[in-house]
Image (cartoon, rainbow, N blue to C red; front, side, top):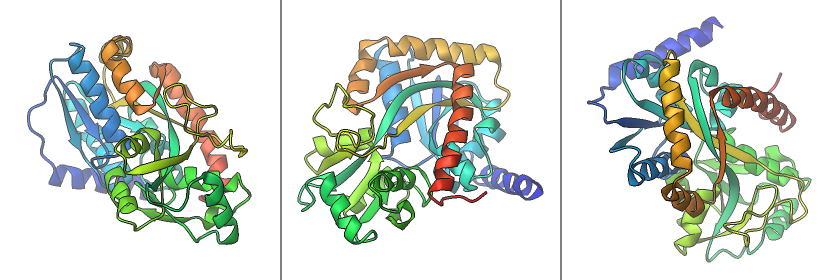
Amino acid sequence: MKMISLLKKSVLAAVLAGFCHSALAELHIIIPGGPGGGWDTTARSVGEALMKSGLESRTSFQNMSGGGGGRAIAYMIEIGNKKNDILMVNSTPIVIRALSGAIPFSHRDLTPVANLIADYGAFVVRNDSPLTSWQQVIEQLKTNPSGLKFAGGSARGSMDHLVAAQAIAAAGIPGRQLRYIPYDAGGQAKAGLLSGEVELLSTGLSEALELANGGQARILAMTAEQPIADYPEIPTLQALGYDMSFTNWRGFFAAPGTAPEQIAAYNDTLQKMLQTPEWEVVRARNGWINLYQGPQEFAAALAEQEQELKQVMLDLGFIRN
C-alpha cells in the first residue's frame, strides 16, 4: 500500500510539473490516450452531438496519453476538481489496468458520471490480406499459435490484448500464446496494420468500421452476442461457433469531490443528447449501442465488472493471485 501511495504521488508530481492548462471552454473533455483510438472517437463524437444539437455552444478536447491512462487520471485527481465543466472519457481499460497493476489508480479514485454506450471488439485485416475469414485465422493459429501478429492500441495485458486472447481461447488455443504487438493508441495500431507490420488488428468496432468504410481493411469478426442492426453483415464469434462475447462500455468520469448537483447537471445534458437525431447519426456511424447508466448504476456495474474481469485475467494467466 505504501508503494502504491508513493507511486500515486510521483505521478501527480510529474503531471503538475509538466502540465499547464489554459482557460476552459463550456465543456472540456480529457482523453487519456492519443488520437485515433476509441476514447478519442467517443469524446469527439459526443462533442459533435452536443454542439450540433445545441446542448453545448462549445466543447474542447485534450489528448493526454501516458502511463497507461494514469497521467490523465492523475490530472483529474489533482487539478480537475479546481475547474468547472471538465470530464474524462474512459472505458473497460480503467478496470483492466488497475487489476494488472499498470496504473496506481482505479475507477474508485474518480467520480462516475454516466455510462453512455456499449462497443464491441473487432478483428481486422488489410484488404489485400490472404486471410478472408476468422476460421482461417484460427486454423493458422492452431498450427502455430504465435504465427500471426495482432496489433492493439494499448499495452500488453490491456483490453485489446485481453479480447484477442479470449477470442482464440474460445477456439481451444492458449490465450497466453497470442503474439500481441502493442502500440500507443489506436491510430498507431491502425498504421501498423496498414503498413504490414502486423497481420491483424484487435480494436473497437467503431475504429474497425472507420478502416473498413474507408476501403483500407476488412472486418473478419466482432464480439457482440448477436449481430447488430446497423451492420448485420459483420459475423459475431458466437455465430461462427465460438463461445465468446465481449462488451466494452464507454462513459464519463468527473474529478473526486465534484458536487452532486454538478453530476446531476451532466447527466441531464447527456440524457437529452441521447434523444437527439444528431446523436443517432454518430451512434449508427460507429456501430454503438446505447447503454445509459446514471452514477449509482454505473458505479455498481464497474464493481461487478471488476470481479468478472479479475477471474478472466486469472484464467488466462494475465495476473496472479
